[in-house]
Amino acid sequence: MSLKKILIFFLSIILISSCGNSKRKNKKALAIFSTNKLVTEYNDLSLKIDNWFKNLYSTSRFSGNILVAINDTIIYENTSGYSNYETKDTLTTLNSFQLASVSKQFTSMAIMILKERNKISYNDDIQKFIPDFPYKGITIKQLLTHRSGLPNYNYFSDQYTDKETTIYNKDVIKLMIDSIPAAYYPPNTRFDYCNTNYVILASIVEKASKMPFEKFLKYEIFKKAEMNNTSIFIKNKNDRIYNATKGYHYKWLEAEPSYQDGVIGDKGIYSTVEDLLKWNIALNNNKLVRENTLNEAFNPAQPEKKGNKNYGFGWRILKCIDNSSLIYHGGWWRGYNSLYIRDKKNNATIIILSNIRTRSFYNSFRELLGIIDTSRLQQLLDFEEKLASLKEEKPDSLETGL
Image 1: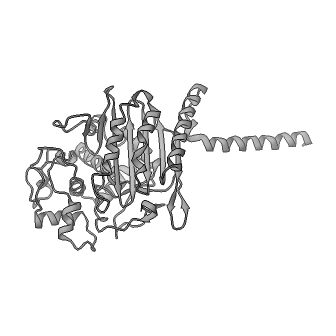
Image 2: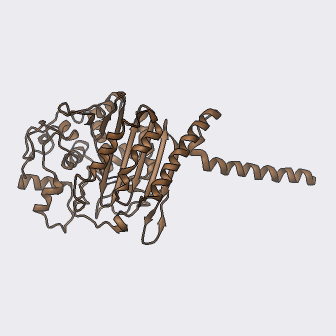
Image 3: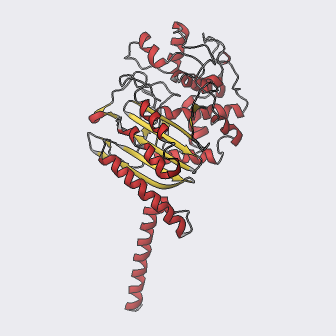
């Protein structure tokens, strides 16, 4: 082989390698786009989001991961902070976070799957599955939509336990049967967000499927949605979570374990930003339930609620002035914050997971939503106010989640 051919050969290898590396770096944003116009459009949007994110972590104590997708394709993904502050391990996109109340949408999906299989009906009474349950006239649908009027286990369990022994779903139900803490309201009279509802729903999933709740989610949701880095944390049962972060409070104070860490359905799922995008793709492609079944989850179920905020099956619903909707949920538990937004008008998905609970988590997201849709910037003021108010709803010492 001549010297010229050898040089050409090696130059080709270098160019191929460089292109491969470039594609790997940018495959999230550019993989499916075929025209320069589209590439430029989303690169501009990505740059604006990047400027917003840099400002967020440079002016606050934010620690976490963010992913923004359009049409289920990542246009922006980034991390800031530590997965473990003591060892100074920096975050990566593979790190998993406690989703807190974002977990509720997976519990509602389990119920919808069982409903499609004729294992349950939304009108079924709780006593069909838990015969000794002392509160009468409460249906599965009322649990899904927080219209049961049941007391919140995060509060009443403090009165009946030593706070040193981990409690589980069966313990919450036993406490309710043995002690019958007072209901807040009669069933179906008003909306009252209550974690107890989703604890009971998780137990109904077990009764109807004859399978532990965590296994049902693993095989019927996580595996089918290809969410390979998602699992349920149950204290003393499933403590080892792959690439799990540690949760912190202000000034990197590590969040203490809670005796309620054994309770699931209302919280407990650990996941990554990319796995949550896979969840979004599964929803959009009807991998888990039929479209008409899924759409029920996004229907406002609170007829007496005035204004533009409502709730479906494990999802909050914000109606904008232009009649479009933001379907979302947030959560917090033991130092973790989570926020997952589906903007159907723009086919946009925003996923933000944080492992340090700070005021900054809720302060700037109107701006991010406005970047994606500038025409709705003013309409989203109310959404920002709602997010900001959520941190005032419960005291830090209890953290009952969103």
